[in-house]
Amino acid sequence: MPKAYWIATVKITQPERYHMYQQLAPTAFEAYGGRLLVRSDQPKVLESRDGQTPERCVIFEFPSLEQALACYHSTEYREARAARRHAAIVDITIVPA
Image (cartoon, rainbow, N blue to C red; front, side, top):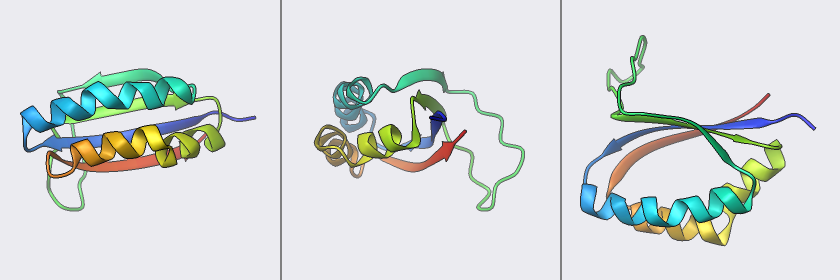
């Protein structure tokens, strides 16, 4: 079964509130086999459709596309997303390998 990668770009708008997300999200990633590959606060954007540069890029590796999607739709991650609401502008893409 091919792996999948969860790629997120993040612009934090309320750091105190975003911290709550950071406390909750790892539980979901661990439960679904997600492994952090990259977390960088220094992304180098070469092309952007909206001209925005994210503050952070994060890449997780999952054992499969099914596991990555299950993590995103899980109760654990839904709780983390709720904590993140209004605290960051986030784009998430899941890419099968």
